[in-house]
Structure formats: C-alpha cells, structure tokens
Amino acid sequence: MAQYAILIYAHDSAHRLDATPEDTATCDAHSDELTSGGSLVLAYALTPRDMATSIRADAVTDGPFIDSKEVIAGFYVIEAPDLDAAIAIARTNPVVRDGGGVEIRPVHSGGFVQR
Amino acid sequence: MTEVEAALADAHRREWARVLAATARVARDLDLAEECVQEAYASAVTAWARTGVPDNPGAWLTTAAKRRAIDAIRRDAALRSRLPLLVVDDEEEPAHPEERDVEELSEAVPDERLRLIFVCCHPALAQEAQAALTLRLVCGLPVPDIARAFLVTEPTMAARITRAKKKIAIARIPYRVPRPADLPERLRAVLTVIHLLFTTGHTAPSGAALVRADLVDQAMHLARMLCSLLPDDTEARGLFALLLVTDARRATRVDEDGRLLRLKDQDRSRWDRAALAEADAMIVTSLRAAPPGRYVLQAAIASLYAEAPAYEQTDWPQLVALYDKLLQVWPSPVVALNRAVPLSMVAGPEAALAEVERLEGDERLSGYQYLPAIKADLLSRLGRPAEAAAAYRRAFDLAANEAERAFLAGQFAD
Image (cartoon, rainbow over all chains, first blue to last red; front, side, top):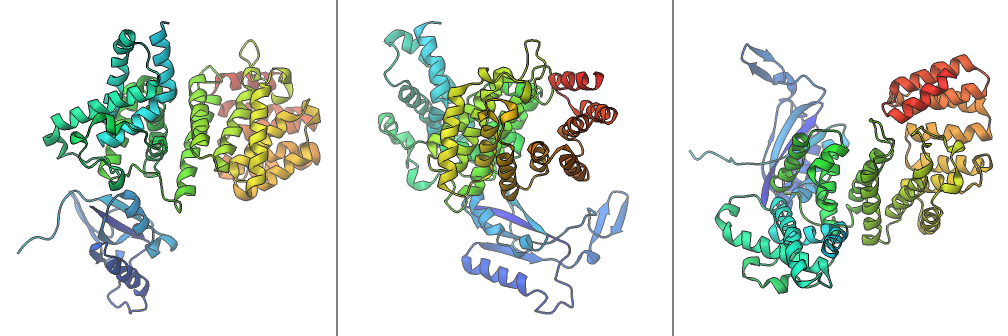
C-alpha cells in the first residue's frame, strides 16, 4: 500500500463560512463514500480563495499563490496499492465532472505531529 | 556476419521485448532488468560460439537474464529494501525469487510483453516519454538511436527515459495489463504512441529525408506485435492495417531526386500489393466485426485511395461517406480538412474551397501546412493562379521537412 495526496482544483471552494449543508452536500457525500470504502486517511476542505494570503520574499499579498482559474479547494490523502487504483479512486471526485479536476501526488513522508 | 551474429541480431529483433518483460517481473526494477538483458545478449556471443545457437534462443536469453537478476537481488538485498520496486501483482510474483530455482522460473509463462507495453504507454507519463520508453524497453533501441529519431541530444533523451522510469517506480505505476473496464482507454494511449512513432518516421517533421525508416519499421513491428497479442481488438488491427497501407506506398512518395510526389503522380505499379492485400483483409473483417473505430476507418480510407487503378478512378463518393463516419467517431479538424479533397471531386472545387475557408477559422489548424496546400490546389483548379501561389507560399513557410518544402517551392515558382 502507498499513500497518495489528492489536490482538488476547482473554480473555488464551496466551503464558505456561511455555507449551508446543501452547498457542501456533494463534497460531504463523496467524503462519506471514501470513508466507507476504507481508503481515506485524512481530508481537509479549505475556505474560498478570497480568504487566501500569499507570501513571497518581497511581499505579502491577498489571494492564492498562483493567479489562475482554478484554486486548490481542498486536499485529502488516500491509501491505494498502486497508481491505477489511486486514479480509479481520484476520478470519482465530483469536481472532475464539474469543470475542475484533481492532481495525484505520491506522498513521500509525513503525518500528524505527536503532541 | 557469422551464424552466431545473425542469430543474435534475429533474437534481438524478435525476442528483446519478451526477454525484458519476463526479466522485469523478476527484477522488479526496469533499470536492473535492462542491464541483465543486455548482459544476457552479450554473454550469448561467447556461449553460442562455443555450444552452438540454442534451439530456442529466446528461452536461453530469458533464463540467462533472469539468473543475473536473481544474483543481483541476492547481492544487493540491503540496497533494494530502500528502493521503490516495480509493483507486480502478488499472485504472479514468485514469493522469494532468490530462493527459487532458475529453471523453475523460466517455465513457460504467459506472454508478458503486453504488460511491458502498457507500463511504457501509461497515461501518467508524458507522451514523448511514452514513445521513448516504448522504443527503449519494448523495441530495445539504444538511447543514441532514440535521441536521433526525436532530434534531441543523447543526454536529453537519457534524462527523459530515466525520469519516466523513476516515475513508474515512485508513483507505483503497476506492471499489469489494465482491467477490462480500463482497457479501451489505455489501449488508445498505446495505439496513439505507435501511430505517433509511425507518423514521426513517415514524414519526418524536419530534416532532409522524407522517411526515417527506422522509426517506421519499429512502429510496424509494434503494431504487428499488438495485433498478435490482442487478436480480437479491431482498433489494433485497424492501426496495423493503416500503417501497412500507408507504408505500401513508401517507395513511390519521392522521385529519384528525393522530390515529393503527390498521390496522383505516384507510380501505382510500384506499390506493395502484398501489404495492401494483407491490410484489406484486416479492414474487411474489422468493419464486419463491430461499429468501426477511428483507426479502422482511417485504414479503410487509405485502402480505398490505394485500391483505385488510377487516381482519376478513385471512388470519391465512398470516400466522402467514410470521412463522414470518421468525423462522427473522431471529430478532428484535420479529418474535416482531408474530407475536402474527395469532396472537391464529388461536389466540385468551389464547394470544397468553401469548406476549407470555413476551417481556416479553426485555430487548431492555424499552423497546419496542409491547409494552405489543399487550398492552393483548389484555387489553382478554379483558375485563380495568383491566390494559389500565395497559398503555396504560406504552406512553404509552415513546412519544416526539406522534401515537402522543395515540392511547395516548385508549386509557387511555376
């Protein structure tokens, strides 16, 4: 088994602070699906692009680091035996059929910090 | 060439992919597998000179290469435990290859070349890397030759291949034939790579010679291999038929001075009739078997062009009908453009010109030299020589192949 991070690229995150359960229903349903499938290791939904702050050597600016049509709306880590299995899981993300997409990155190392 | 040299050259051409594919499964490392297979071929030079060429050179080479792989695994066990290994399915993997007998490992195994082909043409690899990896691992072409074929330096090509192999190991691209549900999509990637190798060789995108024969031969070899490995796949057969028909005209595409000849000016008596007949038989059975896909239809079109005893006797209405079908399964602007040629014979150059002018608005064709070339031909048939010359000039500016440029230059100089 290996771990793969999946980065969600969407026009924006549906997770506004005032988002209703209806607004995030698709994301939640997918998250439930992955959890019950046993492949999900961890998952984070991020707030919309308006909330992003970017930092470079010369400045701190408002907005995502890369100015593009899509932003990273969230990310999660799954466990899969190989890349084909990871692709099969990642392509079920609803964003793929909704004008966005996902990027799969094999995890090198990491995890929660013991405190 | 001595008997051993001839046998080795033959075994390289015929058996390389099979030997490497089997060794890769044991080595679980493409670099190690490659190294072992190379050493096996090298050791055959002296061994075969001493004992004679074995009855089954492929089996001899496979055993030799696997033995080397197992030795290396034993020797470098500590190092290997830290390396990402090729993902091989458990049920097929020998539990402890270092403890198994070599003879046992070299028993008849199902053909593993498909696995190797699918790993090389995995969509997670860049297409240029897929093509390079296929030439290196499946065809056994040396890196300098691959670099030359793609007009890049040797270090650039070596780096490209190394990077692809690293990704296969680290991202865990599995050494496996895709499951049936994924097969059509994955097969499309394989067919695309073979087609790309062929077209790159057939009209070398730049440089002096029109045909880079080594690439064409490797693509034909791959297409034939794929057909034998997937005998029921109509698109694999369609691609092979397409390559056969196109290549059957290889000898007549340029004149004695290397100048490009148009289809209508080519000497049809010099076309390879045996290849055309082989392709035709495949096309007929494929068309009957299933709703035809892109390659079967392209092959049918190429074959129909080649079938006519003379250019003027080509079955133009049937061609337009085939192009219409092709546009349904593959709505490419290039196909729409090529359709304008038979359309001009059925509905007249005026109607075809209108179609070409409509396609000029498609930005995907903006740098495509065949659009102004086809337009120029239509304009000249309509008696508009000045506009035709300007269009030939534009095609000339876009073309990079010397033989094509010389042909186009001749057209606007007239």
